[in-house]
Image 1 (cartoon, one colour):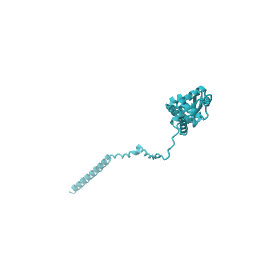
Image 2 (cartoon, one colour; image 1 turned 135 degrees about the horizontal axis):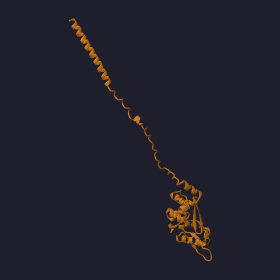
Image 3 (cartoon, helix red, strand yellow; image 1 turned 30 degrees about the vertical axis):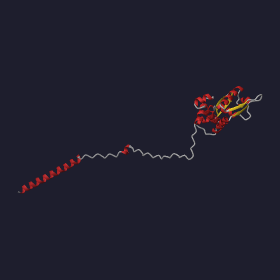
Image 4 (cartoon, one colour; image 1 turned 120 degrees about the vertical axis):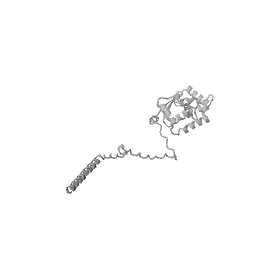
Length: 225
């Protein structure tokens, strides 16, 4: 079924031309006739290719409508932007995972989704691959390595999307020092004991003077009598 398409299937489909024959298909994928035959058998079972056997001539190989639609879908998705799954894939490649089995287990997606993203990453030159003996080894390119180092790129702003309002930061009131925050304590009221003593002294002196005057006046009066 087409849902079971893997990266090897997708690359093999893309190598088939209008004049491709079964007997020479191995040379297109750098594989032996036996390995190429196994791959073609899988593609035939999934309904992606068909071939016509003729004797004594060679067997013509053709891509079915389903196969053409699969390749067209891959080419369309290859034009898309770099996303989180792409970043996860190249991150795993940077850790040394090179086989489809290792990468599939690391990112845990379907073989079809992985195939589409690997195809896109290859077309956009984030990775390269080598098809040999019926298997594919995948490695990062310099572009892919630098992308891993730089991290996931920021998503571009959508046109027409409202921009978040700028929030004016209110200045924080200055902290009043403790000495300024508290009003100055009023000076303690001076004790009035000193003033009272002075008044009593004056009153005492005045009283004595008055007594002396009275006594003097009395003695003066007595002297006249």
